[in-house]
Structures are given as structure tokens and as C-alpha cells.
Amino acid sequence: MTLTPDKNDRFTDASANRERKRIKRDITFGHMFQEFMERYSKKQKKSWHYDEREVNKFLSHWFQRKASSIARHEVQALHEKIHDENGLYQANRLLERIRAIYNKAIEWEWQGSNPTIGIKKFKEKSRDRFMKRDELPRFFEALSKEENETAKDYILVSLLTGARKSNVLAMRWREINFTTKEWRIPDTKNGEAHTVPLSDRLIEILKARHDAKSGEYVFPGSGKNGHLADPKKAWKRVLDRAGITDLRIHDLRRTLGSWQAATGATTAIIGKVLGHKSPLATKIYERLDLDPVRAAVEMAQDAMFATIRNPVK
Image (cartoon, rainbow, N blue to C red; front, top):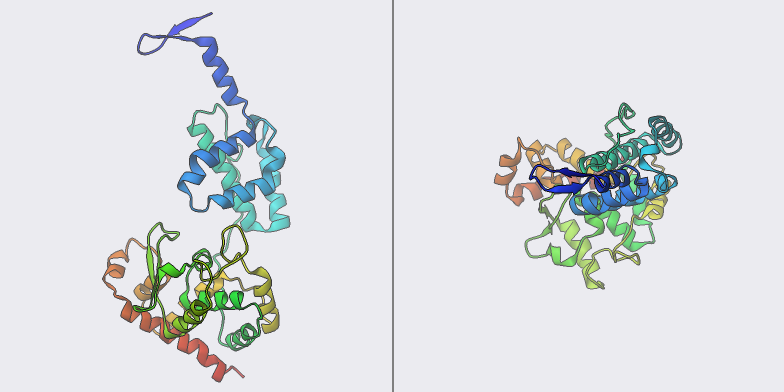
């Protein structure tokens, strides 16, 4: 047995150290991913469940392989395959996850290299889709015919608040103040609480749901979370009836912001409504009370609903 002194003049077993390094070097990708989830993702990322879902979906065939055996050309080939089959955004997000898993392992003293080095993401185009004047009347008519009341109300509340999809899905009754007409989201993507002003239209929708409520969620569901999951089928039915294509639920958020801009709202007020976090505008946001913000939301909502009475010919 070979003993070597460490910096404190204590003796350690050199062969044991080599064995520990070998184990670290030879861990499987599955073990590396598990460590990434437990030590980092679940502790520091609100979106950790996406890491868990996407890696299990696309990378489970690597779980039994030594992490050190996965080569750059394999990652490159997978990146291109996912692009062709699932789109460039899915491909880029997966590449980012692989890169992060290896980087964290290296940070935690794994003796190996990151196979994503040198692989470039596909060029992405910022999405600017929102509903135009000629689409809104068809959208409102199609939405009024939706038989799933929970999904219908969820879609309308998403449009009229401009809130993020995950926050609307998980909206709780205890977060709603009918007296002050406010919805306080305790935790957002920005890591901060956010207060959303509620217009009379929204109050009417919420009160109707409140009268028939059951449970803690505004939009209850049968899934494991207790609230409505992504209502893809209802959303598709609405778009099909309206004859609208290439519109996502997240675009409802952009739609409210765009109509606010069209009706004269300032950038600061739009940011306050949507909960944007900008270091340059933070001080302005902090000085804004909710009365002008609510007024701007109501003006945008009035303009959107006016398209029903005055559709584009």
C-alpha cells in the first residue's frame, strides 16, 4: 500500500484515491443526470420538471453508458435528429441540458470532458405572433362555443391577464382579492411575487367560478397537481373553429401587451402588467400603483372586444 502525505502532512491511501477518481470518471450518464437533478436542478430551477421530462424522453438510451464514452459526433447527430423530428427549439433546449449536465459534473470533480463543446445551437428567431384585428372576432366566437367550461375560462383569463401559462394554470383562490380586484402571484419565473390588476370582466368570470368552486384551484383538474393541465385539445378546437393557425397559448400574453401598446400604454405600464423584470425600468415599476395599470389593461380589453362589433371587412 502506498501512502502519500497531503497538504496537512496527514497520510492518505493513494490507491483508494485512484479508485475514487476511477469511479467518478466511469460513472454512467444516467447516474450523472440523477446527480444533476438532485444536487442542482430540483434545488435551483423552478422548471426542473422539464429537465426530468425531456432528458428521460430523448436521452434514456444513454443512461447505461459511461458518460465518458459519449462522443461529440453522437451529440451532434442527436441535435440534428431532434431538429428534423421535433424542431429547432426542442433541439436547442436539449443541447443546453446536455451541456449543463456535463458542466455540473465537471464542476463536481468528474474527470472527463464535455462532448457538447464546439456544437452550436441552431439560429432561433424571436417569436412575435399575436392576434390581429381580423382574428379576434373569430377567436371570441369560437371560444364562446367551447363546451369545456374550465378550459374556456382558463383561455379567456390567460388573454385578459397576460399572465404566464403556468401561473394561470396554478391560480389559487387564496391569491384572489375580490375587494381590491387583484391577483397576487406569490412566485413567478422571475423569482418574485407579482400583483395582477383584475378588470371587471375578469372579476365577473372569477366570481362565477367562485360560486361553483370546489378545492383550492380556480381551474381544478384531475391530474396529480390538482389543477388543470395544458388544455391542448380545447385550444386546438378553438383555433380550428376560428380558422386560426400558428397561435400558441403563450401568444395570448403577447396579444394583451400588443393591444396595450396599440391603445397608448407606456412601456413601463406594459412591463408592470406582464411582470417583466428589467433592471433599467425597475425603479419606474416600483413607483406605479395599480390604478393606471388597471386602466391600461381595461382599455386594451375594450379595444379587443370592440373588434366583435366592428370586424374587419
